[in-house]
Length: 128
Image 1 (cartoon, rainbow, N blue to C red):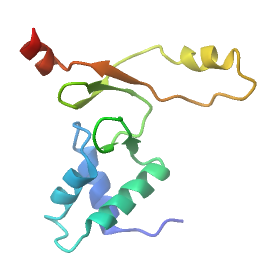
Image 2: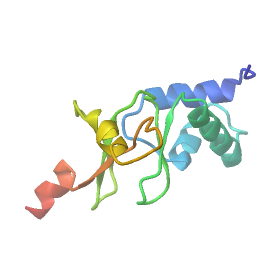
Image 3: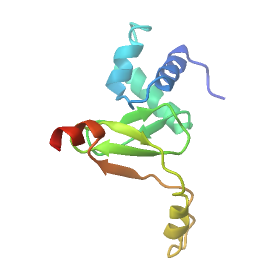
């Protein structure tokens, strides 16, 4: 059983209110308001632990630092190639990807992570 931590609970609650998929630095700056003595290392450790136990998602986008999502349910993300913004995508019916991936694979497919890339609505408007 995991020992209760007010700091960890505060980090989880902060992420639950955000839909912009903040970086650890952003989480740190905001949590520091409530816990002035918290270190960036403590924030990183708690984010990693929360992701490990499935309470949040850690998104390694390949563009800039890792991002964190307070919604642990499986869902898809869009990453803007221009500004790096990470957005949730409302996509239904992609579960068949696991079946397709498993057709020529002798192991067992248990899930997948897919990122969609392009221009977010704001960047698309600027370049159009």
